[in-house]
Amino acid sequence: MSSALLTDHYELTMVDAARHSGRASRRSVFEVFARRLPSGRRYGVVAGTQRLIDEIEKFHFGDEELAFLSDNSVVGEDTLNWLADYRFSGTIRGYREGEIYFPHSPILQVEGTFEEACLVETLVLSVLNHDTAIASAASRMVQSAGGRPLIEMGSRRTSEHAAWAAARAAYLVGFSHTSNLEAGRRFGIPTLGTAAHAFTLLHDSEEEAFRAQIATLGSDTTLLVDTFDVERAVERAISVAGPNLGAVRIDSGDLPVVVRQVREQLDRLGATSTRIVVTNDLDEYTIAALQASPVDAYGVGTSVVTGSGHPAAGLVYKLVSRQDDSGQQVSVSKTSVGKANPGGQKKAVRVIKDGIAQYEQVMTGETLHPDITESRELLVDYMSNGERLEHDTSLSAAREHHLHAIAELPPHAFRLADGEPAIETVIN
Image 1 (cartoon, rainbow, N blue to C red):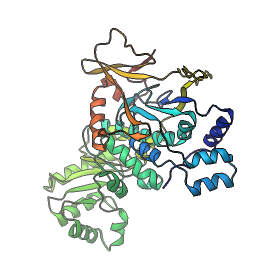
Image 2: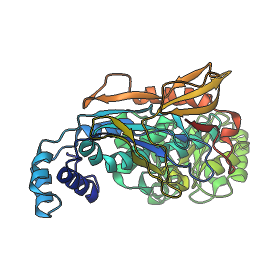
Image 3: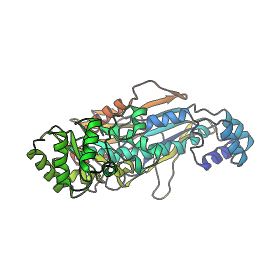
Image 4: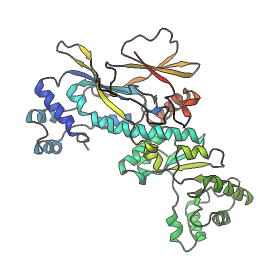
């Protein structure tokens, strides 16, 4: 399916007008960056780049798309003819998926003629703003969980396609499983799921429901114990499954209190290996509040698929360089109040000392500050001349890179209270 109409009307009218002015073929560089991090965040996480490259490869105008543009007089005949042969033929480079970013980090660069790079703006931003927002929120949850597994289970709280994209972004930063089967099929993410309250209510008794589930899924399953009375349900669960029951799930109540009581009850019943899984509208703050509780795993829904209050990362796509009439690249930038950005195509490095990130150096020149002795290049090539470049862009590689990148952050990066970005972005 073509992704060509996953865009805004004005992308096409800009191209149409630029073709009339004779400027559409000027070589141009667009950069994606955030002017600021969402309130309360100390860092962001790049995600969605591989999904974006997939969509750009499908960005072409077939008969149906061209007919729609013609019927609605979106562009003129000359531009329609040009669109009929459109394929992105430029260069895309950016931060790796799983990389940490900060304000003004040039996390993606799109280089090509103005007309071809302009057309993909909305697609670039819709993919990266969504996936980056999810990954950034999910990473905070992973850090709050302190090594305990997190299950992504928010499909019913977002649109059907955003659901599997969100599952991918959450898994990228350390979630262990998803409930979404399409995410499992597309990306090989481990899937989990057992039963909801409706399954218990379907049966004539809670005990009957537990027996049916265990008969089908085995004693290593997870039984939901808060449909009625938690204490009685835990007793029934162990009576039916025995002391080797896999887990119980709690989806309501004062979780620190209920979890402690359930752990004590399970231990009294000899079910010392039975795990406790909690759900119930969790986010990074409630997960952090449960650090001292005997929780074995968390199931997170609404907050992860909605970016925990920040459903878009605030990324923008700005022209920073273009050819002039002599064929030379010149720096361009906005100077609007509150929206100014430095022009020129950037390079970016993470400056490191003793294994800890000190600051991010963003520069338009080639020379690092002479005091820098250890740094890490942040931009890698994804496409050249419209062709995808071969390097390890798997989801497992992104997970591994995120672990490396986040290990470089100073300890204060993981505070949940409001504060400045974990490290400064130095632009020169």
